[in-house]
Length: 128
Image 1 (tube, one colour):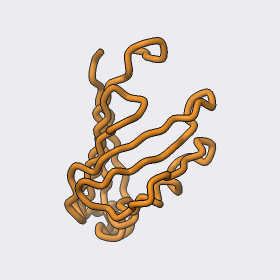
Image 2: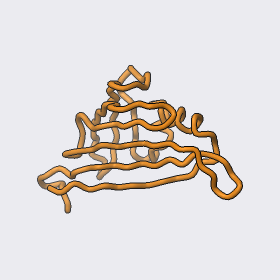
Image 3: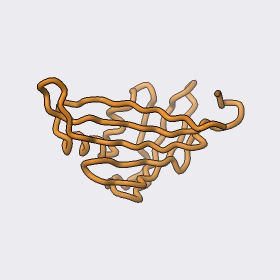
Image 4: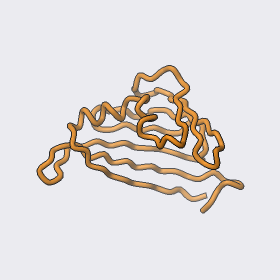
């Protein structure tokens, strides 16, 4: 099964430290996940740091509930953090979140870069 990479960037007209702090709060995952996915954090430990394991449930495809847990393997405020799937729907999932000061036109803010390396599961639900 092949490994894929998805990269996306977005400018946010807010200071880098503020943008990082928003994305580094696990409870904000529900705010940035589409409502129809029924995202719910299930773990109680939510203090962001290296080694934190987050557990959550969501209903992404065909209303099939999915449980997922990921571990924060890198945490370097306000520059970046990485979460790696420990248990979930993918054969591999590593998500790097990078935050840099940026300017877009006359606006100062932060550039968020997301890089996801993933491998789909094998079997009936896998596609290539």
